[in-house]
Image (cartoon, rainbow, N blue to C red; front, side, top):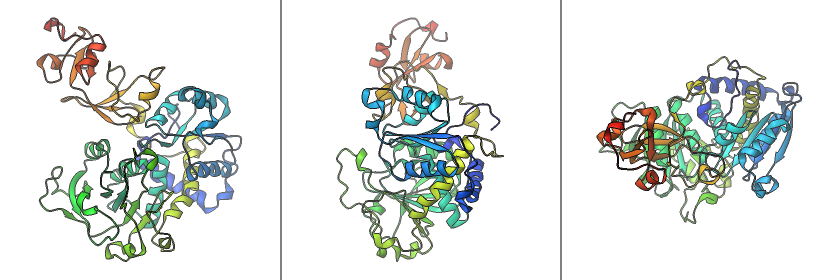
Length: 453
């Protein structure tokens, strides 16, 4: 691969847009004859470490490796691993990647767990889904399916519907669609809107503007018009978040991506009246050329009678997962080469902060909230200096810091105080509360003249 270090796929951001397109072409080659590639990874072993239930993801990875000529070992549930005895994720991946396997596929219920696995494993790590955070290989399958169906990705109008809060496939897919300059329509089940961390990043990193939207003639989408939003980077008249007096009228759809209610991550919230796609839904004029997508498994949000409609492509999504994952693993293992450059973040991550004193991730589902006591210190990326906003390096959730301290003087101040602005960036420590600052040994008293040290 030329860079002298391993490549992981923790987030869809770990692949450049050009690399994704190259992987599509390799997947086409693998798909042309799935039985013709058993020479490619002979002697290679893949380990699937699944601490959360899975059918398609685990089996498609295992099928992909077998079709490449390699072998596989698997831990199909948390109770079958030493996690049930208290072993940390870091120790598990170091052992399994230390001679048992050449590549790891990890699924875990905690947000950010895949980043931990990649940090401590000596072999490539693929994120098979970490909590409600991301599911990048599902995104590759989704993009590949949509690209094959529509012949392009740029400029498409894609509806994301259902549980947008907890669906990790939605989060990864939205980031990828934004990179390919597709337009996104969000139709969440009321109360399950896209998390702020996702919409903030779509605006910050991809320049997407958010406008209220009106989507009519879609029977079965309960409450859709009340919370619908249109996200685009291609409409110059949209200058700010929710500034339009008239909602954007959605008159065309290229695909609707339906998700189930992620009940395993809900705190008992009701999902009565959840959106449902039926044959009547498909008769809508707006659905004439649209594709119906779903990452599966479904529960009751798509009627079985819709399966036979040629616009329904969710089983194709599952089928295309094998050649897509063959291409990905062959690349990460160095068995095929891509001519495209990796993303800039692979070479450097200038925004990554190490010790940020007592600041902790505010996401209760973040893996740092469970494993940091023994070995895992919180890490953040500085998104904004004033007021300070830091993104967790593991789960991507943004935390606000109300106080800034000086490592030299061990004093802290309100972020907007003149003394805080005089602290050199390398000497700054961040705190959400005064209690955090004081617990870390910082004081509000002292001499102001030492703040630039």
